[in-house]
Length: 254
Image 1 (tube, rainbow, N blue to C red):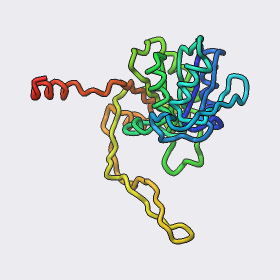
Image 2 (cartoon, rainbow, N blue to C red):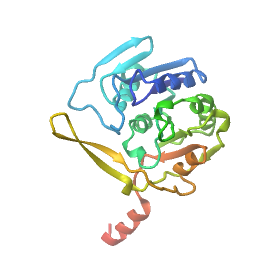
Image 3 (cartoon, helix red, strand yellow):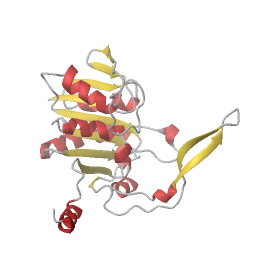
Image 4 (cartoon, rainbow, N blue to C red):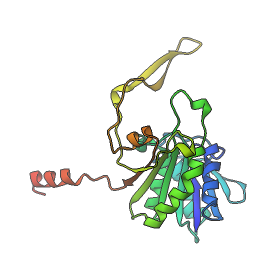
């Protein structure tokens, strides 16, 4: 099996090294193609107006001046052209990618691009506990990643489906199992804009989340992580809402 490893945190991110190690538990045929710099939150963006620069930093390790989506395209259509990967792995992201995160995440977008190009693709993220960002570790992903991927591959990944895997902020032996779950939704009323002033008194802004009580719905990725479980969510690239499609077709006689 040939695996393409990528991420959105950048070519020097610790999570990328973790994912390469996970990939090498499955096969020795691994290529790493990742952004030159941190591209978190860029979603499924492409570099259409700027040239991409490709730098080989070591054998089978490449940095791309571009987005995670660019990296997957460069990997499959250029670097590995003629002998494409059998699997794309994206991550391991520093922080969970659940609920509405999937619409912002470059980690998820890289896996989406792999899927669009006909390669089974899996996104992996490691959650951390609020307030403990500086005490971050990858232990749950390191311990369970390869086994989870093998089980997903044994089942088969349908065309048009991205597999989103999130590991809880727990020690490997404290993980409470695996939950196959739906995409959750946070309370967006907690989102806020934090206004600050620079040294010259000019305003600048950070997007922020207020801390408040939030109970995630059962059966969701949010609930699974809160329970200390590995959350696995299959995501469809087809965003069509078919019940609404039927109703609208009837209303418009289309």
